[in-house]
Length: 204
Image (tube, rainbow, N blue to C red; front, side, top):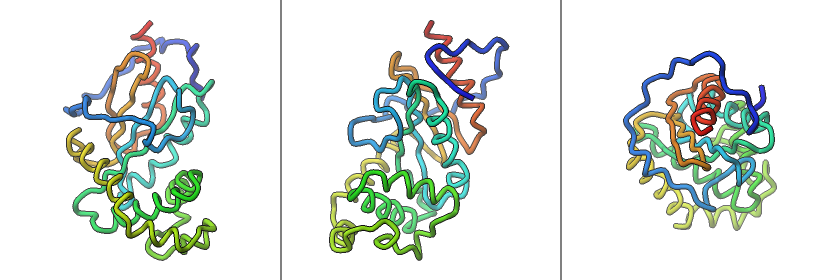
């Protein structure tokens, strides 16, 4: 599977699931949004995720694989923390650990997300300092500072304003036309491919 700007339109019409009623104007993307892949990609997969959600964990490899296989840096993946209330406080605690490890090396964000998706890390017991060769003083200070809390509070507020009620929720953004489409759940990658191809066809 590969996607590029030159991908041929889907020849057979695809049945489109009914999209959730979300306030898509609330999707906020800026230079501080965690991004995997080409920053200037035409399409962004904006995923609202919860580290305590087993469906999110199963889904975590899907956007990464799509970005890795897309031609010409056509697609990137943008991560938003959306801890569900009944998964607290662990969901937020785990997000803080990921962000603080990534504060020392941005590659750590995606290493941790990938390991989590592959069930290779247990946030409750993991030695984050040892696993990712972190400065222990800086890491432990980060865990207690307001800077990471502000990032999480911003993501949570956006998720609420958007109307996310379950995770994973993905908003596909066409950065060229501004069109947005929603896909809920840990669905197969083909659904994302077909949706992106349909969005490209529509803009021709």
